[in-house]
Length: 504
Image (cartoon, rainbow, N blue to C red):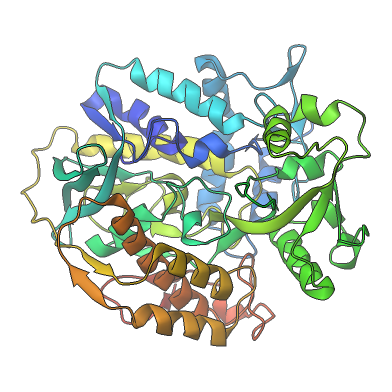
């Protein structure tokens, strides 16, 4: 398992009865996108909710591109998956004995569970790690970044990893490999993601011969903290669900000009509204205002968010928070079936790195943790088919090539030309700059060089697919093609063997 977030841990638990499982973490075992998931986990469990309503909300948010079978698997298997987490010890927020369900943008019912207010991902990860670590067949290795998959183009036999402490590369042989490496937000200069989210899984899989689907659909969270010398800390959508208001620099509410649901509009709509409002007023940010809420409510309901902001001199109970959109979640990724299988034998993917089509063009809020749990378990079960097999023949380790672009240059280019709002001219500028990079070969134990190499490739994939999709849909917005077009109600697909992006 490459990755120790929710999807990787859940898969490890499912696979452990069939044989030895090694979970490899790029950083510490506590550093993953799952750890930072504040918003919660969506599931149709409340008395006034139905699985069919959760399915419909997911399809509507996905803007015509969700795979219905994938969505049905997510929402139908969700309630049992949540009950299993509770049985294992996950402590979701309750009022007395009753679970508390919150409402978030684009949900027709209150169906989002939280843990400790705003630490849902951390709580689920804690319990899954304890469960996995209790199994005798599961081992962990931290601070080991996967730099390449070992593949002959049709089958994977393992991975090449970089040990950060020893500063050396080593080979990991395996009967099957699961990529659960999380997201790619750190391809962008503005992101809510942890530093480890550099798109490594997508890049490694693509170089090995896997297909990548819908990678142009990057969700930008509308409300990341925008303070000087502070990280772009995510201010959860649940804040708006509890009544937070968006105001421009003049103190005016503005969302009524952009959507009838105002602050509870889908997050891509809110992100673009904030972007448009900043362009209109010339401001560098807008404000998220909670000061009208009852005293003590924010600190009690969102303790982690409140304490983090307070650490940077911002008291959310008395001061509005400056916010700005930031790259948050990738709907696209390594193309898989509903069991996590890729086109390469023995290679699986689950969680944010994978694309089953469940999110379509725009993820419904709080579906990502549920996806990690449900599809992580599915991938773990499917991997059992390789448990009794012999190790595949050894594959030669590829010699990496590194671009002469810096990390900062790639990330700035991503934000400026492949960000919240795009244009054909800007995407062509990005591709021209990426294509002009010079390359140097050689084995390197430097993780940062490999991350820059991966950022470069992932940005190239995003730009190519975004340029090919001549429409605006979901999280993909083009000023030169502002409307949806029926001929593009298809999934983008790109593979190393293709010269062009295809739509299927």
